[in-house]
Length: 191
Image (cartoon, rainbow, N blue to C red; front, side, top):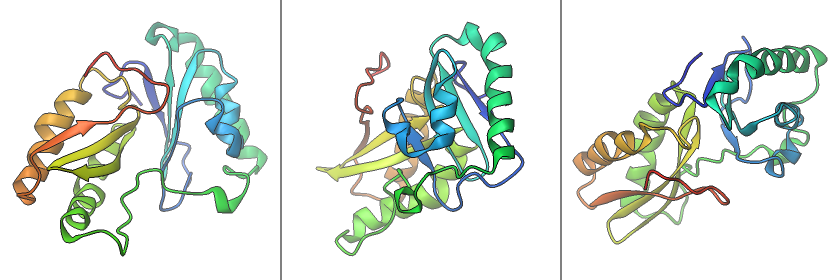
């Protein structure tokens, strides 16, 4: 399935990928814990793999390469799921990379921000093959990291400012702005 990011496609394998969590693999090194992500990074030009509850998003360097890469990624997914290999090698490595779990140490404002992200924002963003990860709240600024198809997407800055920021400001008066925090090793031209 196409996503708003022309460099990313969302694949639905017809089964649960990760139950109750989502995991972002922004490079080959991070994929070492996931046999599925490692397999997908073997395809030339793959720069990001994102695993959702029932989908896999794959991002490549050059959107013009999809005509060659799409059948390879599709075949790799089919073969992987038929093999019965676990998606994440060790169950203890399964961690939701979104950071929206409400902790005992979170104050009321942070808990409300995380709840809105989890209940209203993440499901909408995941429809497009991406995700939003909570990375902090300081001096009225919510720090979020774009994941999956959102990384490098031409419309992500509009989504962040017009969609997410407006919603958070509407429901949480302490929120003054939303700021994107780049994944390690990724430099955006959008911000």
